[in-house]
Amino acid sequence: MFRRRRPELVTLITRQGCHLCELAAPVVESAAVQAGARYEVRDVDADPADVAAYSVKVPVVLLDGVEHAYWEVDEKALRRALRL
Image 1: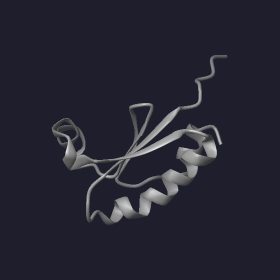
Image 2: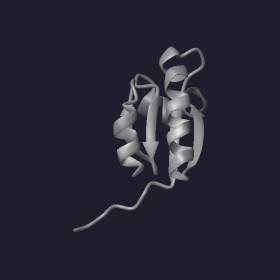
Image 3: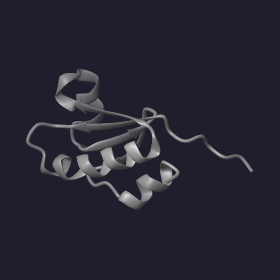
């Protein structure tokens, strides 16, 4: 059976003044830290490519650059994906 490796980078894409982003941030950061993954936060409005890809979806969680969740973060699903 093939087992995927644990994600090394957890990215939270946010926007200033986003209520859902404020709710997601501590959940995502805590899970990333517990998994031993690097954690970064990006402002969607700082990069035209992020605006094009994620503007209507924030907050967005990426695991090693692959979209995992948007709008709301399911903590259990995130923890499963991080192998916690």
